[in-house]
Image 1 (cartoon, helix red, strand yellow):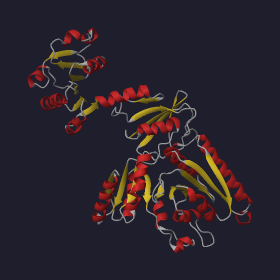
Image 2 (cartoon, helix red, strand yellow; image 1 turned 180 degrees about the vertical axis):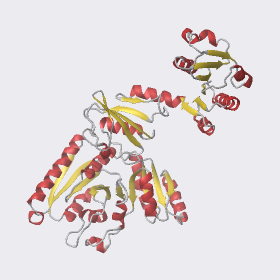
Image 3 (cartoon, rainbow, N blue to C red; image 1 turned 90 degrees about the vertical axis):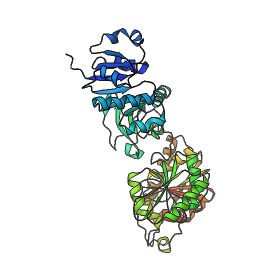
Length: 479
């Protein structure tokens, strides 16, 4: 007697018949269909398989299922062409024979929750078909359709020779809602980690949320900007006074980038303000949602940043406190920057972004700020500038000036890798004054910012002054 496990397939259409053929080598297949002519059109080799049996009848009938002798069967698959029939077959199979492993091919999205409520594992016909077609259309990209959920949450993408991600560590791509599961290089498997560097021709297996995965595949394959998905898909704001003033710029970013909604982080007791913001978002046509996890907004933001995909934190402008201006304190904005690993936008409504200025005035200068400026400029089609300030050599020394020049060349080279033209303006003097002048005709100022940095009375924080005193919107990359 065969010891192969047994499986029931209800529905002998194209899918059911093909599945029976594929399983026949290692399973005993019982196939049920209402059409008495089915045996005549089944492949001859299927009839010859060990343990294969066909039963003509309605699989929603208890009598038909009992005649099929399904006791001890491993599982049941329903692919009858009707979601209603599929669910009834599987419910009956479970009730009569205690079959725990139930599977169905679904046809209409409206039935998805009903299948899941009954504990039925599903494969959506439209998603699976679309994933296969996409894998044919997208050169250098394959969609896994027979593992996982089979709906495109696992992709294999090949890194093109001119991709701008080449030479970059995976940790620099800031994976959220996705991860790299494997890298295949020269016919060998590389188990990736944060320091793994991608190379031309690598085949990269990525796993993640189907909403963002195609864009992440594009980012890895060719380096095309998908801002802000490398950080997250949500623009996030706080439920506080001033947030309503940023809605127009939020709407612009949602329409111009890959951000999909505005998430408002609140705390208990904010109900009235939250309702008002919700009404304003709706009136402004801003897709939004609310979240509250802690007793105060900043703590809620810390928790949200840790568990959610913060793409950009959006803040209303804050007047720079006097002590912070002279280097003896840190503003609330600076403290908020410390709690996220994503760009922070201080919104002043200077959109659309036609001219983006990346500012370089002090060391150390983290190239993540330049990378952010390049991504934004590419995403919105803006002109990119580099504002580069030399302080007098008598103040900072010759070595400092040489290192600044080296950093400038790195930024210009980085822009070249992305095929982005960058105009550099070299200035000398007070960095705060010179950069405020340089960004006078710009729409967005972009800078890196070191978390927890300290400033002194004799050396005010240049970046902090620019954040609070610039007349245009400012985007900061915490480093």
